[in-house]
Image (cartoon, rainbow, N blue to C red; front, side, top):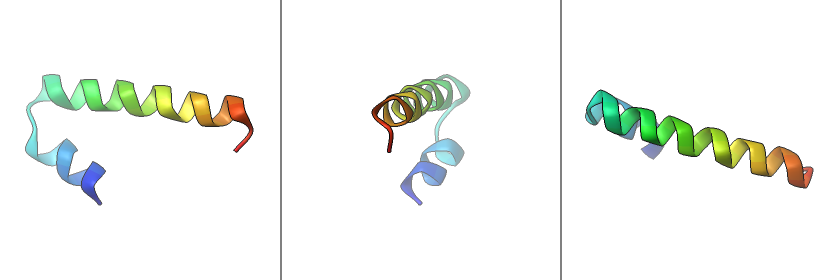
Length: 34
Protein backbone atom coordinates (compact mmCIF):
# COMPACT_ATOMS: atom_id res chain seq x y z
CA UNK A 1 0.00 0.00 0.00
CA UNK A 2 2.85 2.40 0.78
CA UNK A 3 4.15 1.90 -2.74
CA UNK A 4 0.83 3.07 -4.22
CA UNK A 5 0.73 6.11 -1.94
CA UNK A 6 4.24 7.09 -2.99
CA UNK A 7 3.32 6.95 -6.68
CA UNK A 8 0.22 9.09 -6.19
CA UNK A 9 1.58 11.72 -3.81
CA UNK A 10 4.99 12.49 -5.32
CA UNK A 11 5.92 14.47 -8.43
CA UNK A 12 6.82 12.67 -11.65
CA UNK A 13 10.57 12.84 -11.00
CA UNK A 14 10.34 11.13 -7.62
CA UNK A 15 7.84 8.64 -8.99
CA UNK A 16 10.32 7.64 -11.69
CA UNK A 17 13.07 7.12 -9.11
CA UNK A 18 10.76 4.86 -7.12
CA UNK A 19 9.84 2.85 -10.22
CA UNK A 20 13.52 2.47 -11.16
CA UNK A 21 14.37 1.32 -7.65
CA UNK A 22 11.47 -1.11 -7.72
CA UNK A 23 12.65 -2.53 -11.05
CA UNK A 24 16.12 -3.09 -9.58
CA UNK A 25 14.56 -4.80 -6.58
CA UNK A 26 12.50 -7.13 -8.80
CA UNK A 27 15.60 -7.96 -10.87
CA UNK A 28 17.57 -8.86 -7.73
CA UNK A 29 14.77 -11.06 -6.43
CA UNK A 30 14.46 -12.87 -9.76
CA UNK A 31 18.24 -13.34 -9.91
CA UNK A 32 18.25 -14.88 -6.44
CA UNK A 33 15.46 -17.27 -7.46
CA UNK A 34 12.72 -16.06 -5.13
